Image 1 (tube, rainbow, N blue to C red):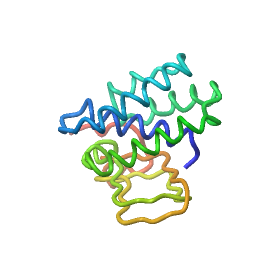
Image 2: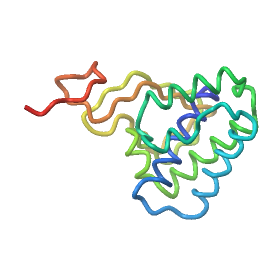
Image 3: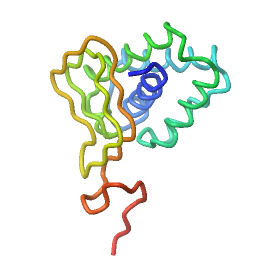
Image 4: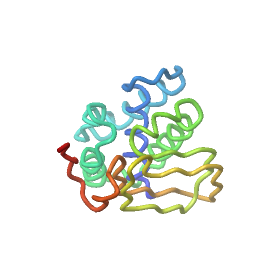
Amino acid sequence: MEPISAIALSLALGAAAVVGKEVVGAVVRDAYAALKDLIKTRYPKVPVEQIEQAPASKNRRAVIEEDLTASGAGQDAELAAAARSLIELVQQHAPAAALAIGVDLKEVSAANLRLSDIAAAGTGVKVEKGTFSGDIEIKGVRAGVPPNNPAKDEPVKDE
């Protein structure tokens, strides 16, 4: 996954785990706080808190990605490493948080898995026991979209 997408995804996962209803250990809370602090210190114009209001929002992740890109964060190896570490910790200690944002990853080592524009009635992405040699890229996941409306991001209206 390219670094910017990984950072935005890790923020969403961390927010879903820490701010959500799931009970998480100090290791996940600390890793999430460290990632947020790193971004706030190096890239203060990136509104990291907005993801906490709606961790599943692809639009909020897109804004964060755009701001990180504009700030040059894609070249920050320490930030990318912190994001990967948080993703791994959430996978180990708070896997239900990934479900909250439409992604279910288990035992992923990572490298060059690219998933994009996914609409699903339930979990948008589920990877179990994946072994990769690098990054994972997941874009455009729309979970909770009914089968008769797969290409729309609009909320479904009850009739």
